[in-house]
Image (cartoon, rainbow, N blue to C red; front, top):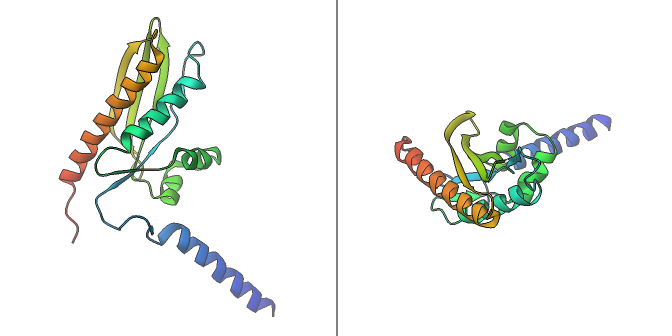
Length: 171
């Protein structure tokens, strides 16, 4: 009887592992050439910058702008935050969530400017695909958030299109 229960338990664990890791998404068609992207909350490096409001607002605007980029599916920010709070490694989190690439970065105030640095990372190889910094006037933080989100989303779209163009066709 104990062996039977152990066998059922092992089968249940294997079913969960298959469902979580290997089953294709029921929402996305496999091999559709669409990148699954996650925006990791930007790290605030300057205490004089409102480290709760500015990065969070930038994150929300960036997610909204990326959702309008062709060939991109953006993962829910609340889902990303939940997995990030669990302190999972990025490759493991990527596998769990079906991520291909992620955008992360930093925000900081430098004198009368706000500097936003963003990175696009291939989560499977951990290779940096693209990175750039942008500076905006600190007097208009809401406008700086909007401009940074738009600039970053545009560059991410361009770099994902380039990657797709040079990816070997699968047969």
